[in-house]
Image (tube, rainbow, N blue to C red; front, side):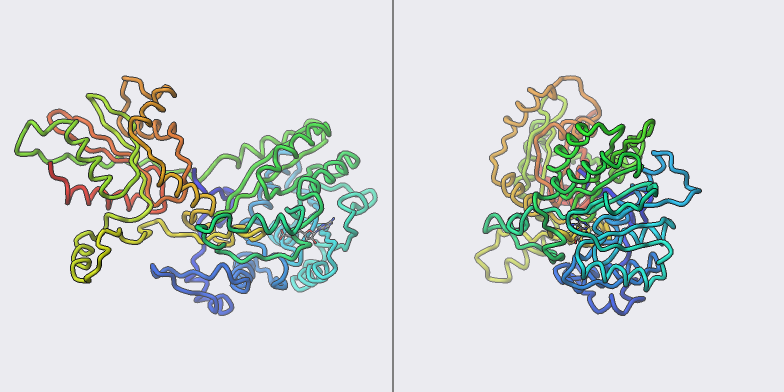
Length: 520
Ligand code: SAH
């Protein structure tokens, strides 16, 4: 699965260059570091660095000067923009004309006041921003003032029991409300979410930002949103489109059920993913003849499209002994080489026309083999067989992401492929250790109807069979398919890239390794 779903109209679909930002913005430059591969990045565990990233992007891309204390939630700009753009889709779907002034409510605006500032500055919408935290309220108000947006944004300090009723002005119609609710039901739950569950798990990579009042609410987000649903039922069409973000996928089902119960006339949901953090968004309306599904269709389930590329094919050299030039012998040799590379190998098809495998690599064991052997021979080390450390190559830039409670994929860049999350690492370990035999896989495919005799083109065949394999691990360096097939008198290896941080470049390198080392 692609881990990247950014709103189609977001400028952050192409990640900003940290290098350029560092050159132009001294406050950002202070936090820039070079990682081992020479890439310019920042320490995502440092709240000051996150703060610099957010304020710099707001200034650079929206002309907004925003201040917020380090002990409050530091919002990531791309994720906030995704929500604002989705609201714009919802308004369009709800028939709100782009030519009339738009009025929205931002529940729990936070110290940054980010949604309201983005909405006012980039869309010209009128916003009523609320918060129950006196310090956040003060800071939000100051941010509005500094940016001279008082004519569009009004900030209101509210009681914790107030959501929408008691906020909406008498006789005023609103086009939408949006909300990023506190996610957790207790500080313990918040702790559990980010705590390492096994000693093998690495510590979180990103800083946790946000005070308890930012992130904790009694009953968690489902309780918070269910109060919103209840109030929305009473307010009806006073607000045309209601919406909320959800921090946990598990909240989506219960919230949708509540909406059904409330008798909404239309509802929609979507998700966006930034760095390695996914957020879900739900919207509903009581307005008759208003179909919000249109907005969902525009954005949902459209991960950045992968370009169809030609397969990589290589004709294996003929051996001196023609009797060895058979699919069975070549297939066995391919499998042996893959295993030498310590890849996890799963059989896809095995018949007289084709032998194909799905292979997964977690480390780069194929690059610079000669150099490594020489180095191993020189360094009088007992550990000669240890593979080289993982190197992310080519376009597989790592995005540090953020496993933090409230720091949504804190790269703020939407950049590259994500580092595996902690749970992904567990899955990888499980897959690495799982005794995955070709026979077992072939049976699994057979049972799922994959083992038919009619053969499509090898690459299509591998892609569709791979989808049927129960492969849960994410975050591998390379997952690919390789098929051994006949082409006239030749035997050809056809490779296809499936996924992985190393990108197609890693697959090219593996093919090169085969060209250099294949002997029958
Ligand atoms: N919108 C900001 C902040 C989200 S954190 C952002 O996306 O970055 C959640 C915010 O909701 C906190 O600032 C918290 O103080 C506020 N909050 C919690 N309960 C509230 C309520 N009943 N009414 C208004 N704000 C509330």
